[in-house]
Image 1 (spheres, helix red, strand yellow):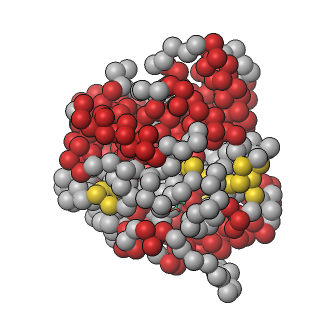
Image 2 (cartoon, rainbow, N blue to C red; image 1 turned 45 degrees about the horizontal axis):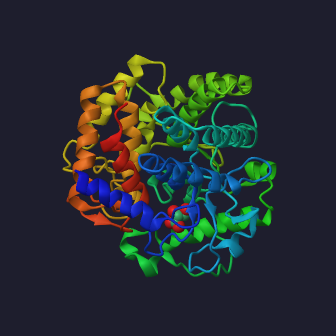
Length: 420
Ligand code: DGY
């Protein structure tokens, strides 16, 4: 095992740039990504606490004035990535994208604080980070849930992090493409196009992005008018857990917490309605088209990670999770393999992702010890056998996408070294 620990650290350090870390060094993602940075910070916290805090700090340097933390920060402008900084044409202090990503950073920060003793300088840094993260959470509540429903919307599939998931097929099929779209993808020059989203997906991503840009990323306007507006279970589960963790941190550091506490109550009540326990299905809401989305995605099971105060429902969800991949050698496929939309090799339409396994494992830990250990050990073994890749086939374990993938290395470190 120590051989792999060394390798994992090497991956992170090899991808590290000036205060931030690339998701991989193979030119596929030549920038800083929001939720990647969170997982990466957790990895660093096992051998360099200052690198961990710096990773988070650098991301927050790109926070917008209204509180939004972008999904990408373009520290290096000279890259072949599409869409690059000039195409987004926005940012505060650092050029960025104009959308966000799953706000898992607060929960990661709490984990880092829980297992490390901070010196005075680090403590001051952490207080500043908590205040910035609170602003980020308040931005979500204010602008992504303007009707105070308890659930926040995403306005672009890229905001979910699971870009081409079949979850978005219904709303994406409704997006009317912009005429005369002109752009050049960089991703398929680096990775086999069979593993990446289709051109039609990109046409829609770019159409939505252009629409947001045309509206100058005006938060109120784009919530109402966006070509894509979905309430997703996975995303809201991450946000609920993050709000719960934020509340603990705010209390711990004696900061004001009343608005966050109120919102947690509201979300807890509403999110449960996205699970139909009679027929054991999960529902995401396509707000834009007033449609229900029912896709067996592993991200639905992030509901376990939200730590709902409902033992009966948690038990039912775990039972269903145990059947999710019961015929596969490698767990968990991003989409249940017997579903018509499943594709073994295409990005978020089937492959196994380490961050999903990690989130599910966190959700299981305090609910089903035995099963959580099973998930953890299977994930560790797969990484040790197949390497620190971006994603893997659930059928053969074959590694795909980018190699030297930072979050696979970082989360491996947490899986093998975390003793709490
Ligand atoms: C990509 O470029 O594939 C990213 O996932 C977008 O965030």
